[in-house]
Length: 253
Image 1 (cartoon, rainbow, N blue to C red):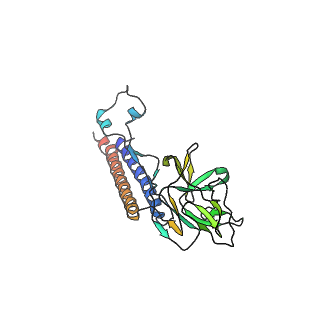
Image 2 (cartoon, rainbow, N blue to C red):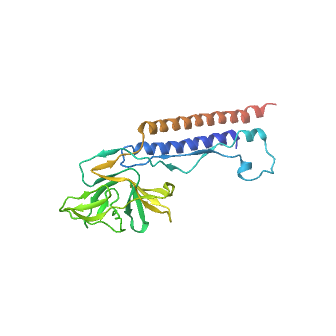
Image 3 (tube, one colour):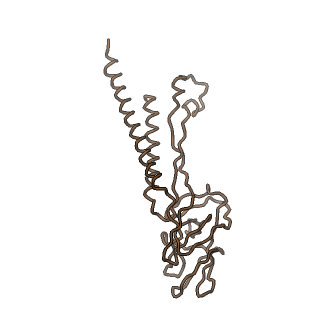
């Protein structure tokens, strides 16, 4: 394969992946508690280095060109979104660090910053987006009465008629790198990662907004798209040169 074509194709595919990530961030600019992703990119080593074939002969000029670029695994930015006041007593947000915990059954405990809650048919406090029960600080569920107002204090304590009925577990993993997006605003936790009590405060009647910067996300979509288009034009030029080399100059003489 034409080496220039190979390098350019790596740029096109990488920029298309960057565009997908930025477009997903932009699509979630109004999703409560959404955390944006970034796509790191690294330069690829030449084939002789990647395949550990240092003893093989090579072309020093080609090696100076490198081997293009490649995307790395996406990374999530856990910066807090703005707190937005609502009129619902079951809307919660965490001011500062921390996550609510959700019981997803066989899939284990999940973490979330989306504190929009609801009460299911069994009287359990659940995450509205997924319908999964919220976990208490004691490890179980929290059952409330539908006939009384629910008060939730800054430490996560849940009260009805002045009586405590449970306390929401608000935790902080030892490392944010242990979290993976699961869907419905939930994060999976790597095994054996310690969960500590979080310092963040629960705010009733508030929802955390998306942490996406819409201007940055839009510029990311446009920038990656332009870079991919430039690469496609370069591929066209390389194809034209290859065609000329084979069908014109190869016939001379």
